[in-house]
Image (cartoon, rainbow, N blue to C red; front, top):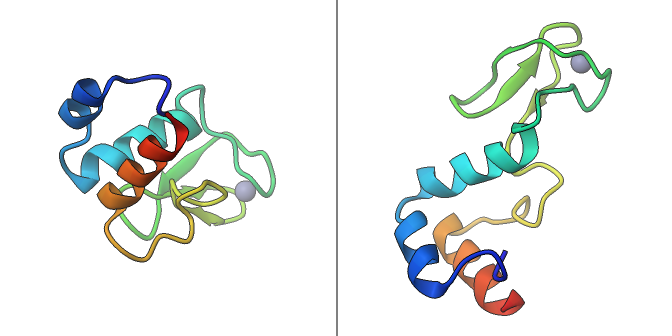
Length: 88
Ligand SMILES: [Zn+2]
C-alpha cells in the first residue's frame, strides 16, 4: 500500500474508518463480485452494510476477510497507517 501513495495522499484519502473499508471493498470487489465459496456472481447486502452475501449459498463475506486486516481488533485507521509505514 505504501508504494501507491505519498504520506499526504494517504492522509487525505483515509480520514475515517469508512474510507478504509471502501478501499478494501474496491480492492476485493472492484473487478466484480464472485462468491468465495461457490463462485456465484450475485449478492445481497450481508450482516453489515459493507458486507456482501451470496444469493446462492448465503455465504457472508466482510471486506477484511482474507486480507491483512482480518485480525484487526482496534481502529482500522491505525492498522492502515501501520501497514502504510511498514511498507514504505
Ligand atoms: Zn455462494
